[in-house]
Length: 83
Image 1 (spheres, rainbow, N blue to C red):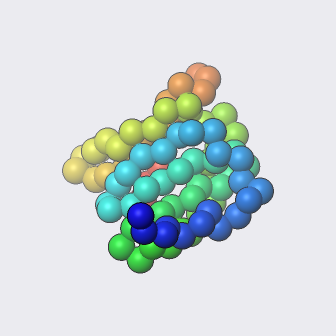
Image 2: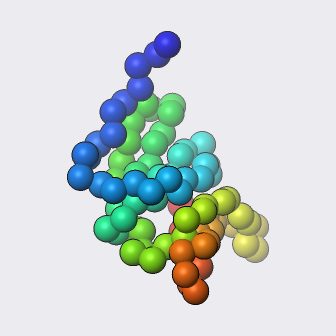
Image 3: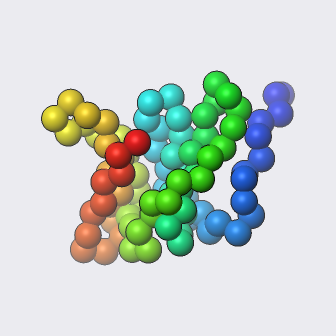
């Protein structure tokens, strides 16, 4: 088994919503943080996007030919993340 990069921060609350797009894994947390894992470079980065009321499910979708990650199921609003 190969060693992979550890998570970059231990203070990010992750509630299980993730999606893959553009050869990267996007893991959505609580508190305006999204973790992005790039397996080719075996590295994580932190991006600032994760609405407090974002959905409990995420999926890659295409809108007008462009990749989006749709977050649904967290209330009355749905959110789109543009990788």
